[in-house]
Length: 93
Image 1 (cartoon, rainbow, N blue to C red):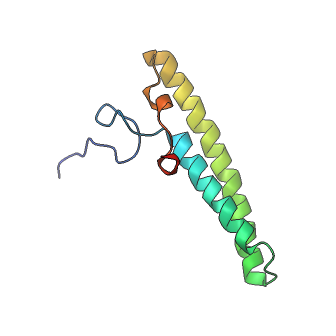
Image 2: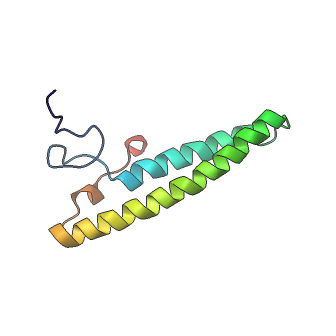
């Protein structure tokens, strides 16, 4: 099987107009928050469980964002440039 060298979303040599991981994850986190606000008044136990799951997921996504930002900073130091910093997440366009 041939190796795939093109990223779908993330900035890379083959996709210089890609996005930073932290920006994509922020958009996903924002979507989850919006979804939560639509059901937060629903008193059904199942919805409460979904909300609890989402709160845990939001914490994990915040951790992912912090790690991705750290990697971006380190790569910027190594390569002296942050090409991805010029791009907005997909929904911001």
